[in-house]
Length: 61
Image (cartoon, rainbow, N blue to C red; front, side):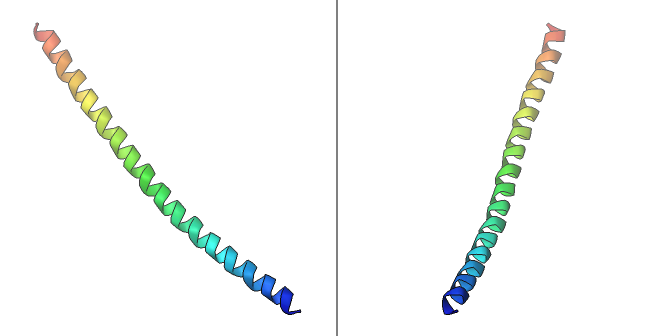
């Protein structure tokens, strides 16, 4: 009987630990994904500005 209670308590502790780890992993993943999207957005904005000014200079030449 004590063995089954031990297994039940161990299972509860492990499920709780994995649940907390899953929540933390989700937060980290969202932060990394947000940073990645910001970096890609900045790169696209810089390339768009370069293309725009290059086009304007091409019109004047």
